[in-house]
Length: 135
Image 1 (cartoon, rainbow, N blue to C red):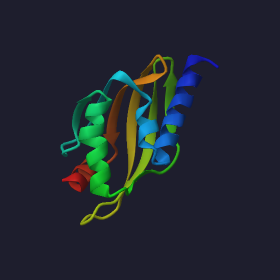
Image 2 (cartoon, one colour):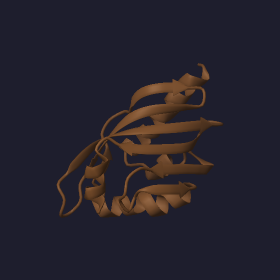
Image 3 (tube, rainbow, N blue to C red):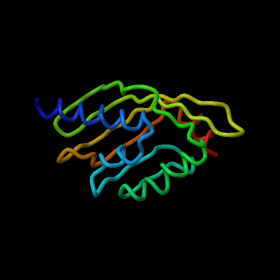
């Protein structure tokens, strides 16, 4: 298996963990010096340094606001897989009290180093709708 195939498998395994609601396993894919970027203008937009930062300022409050109704719906659609990363379209469903359910297709660009996700850049297809949902 070449490096691009290994990276594709890693991302599919990563998404599988999230689709099962397994936060701990999902977060175990992140490198120690992991950095994530979320596009937009909502309270969840910005840059996150390290898994703990992303967990505390993005994952945990998102799960609390959705009361567990944030779901990765399917395996990612892999657009590009190379030796240093993977580009996917991810489909997520979110519900929260006082808001209509929203399904989003998100472009996510991952860089991978030493079999860990080093960076993650997330861009929702309808960023305005996502920003409205979270605000």
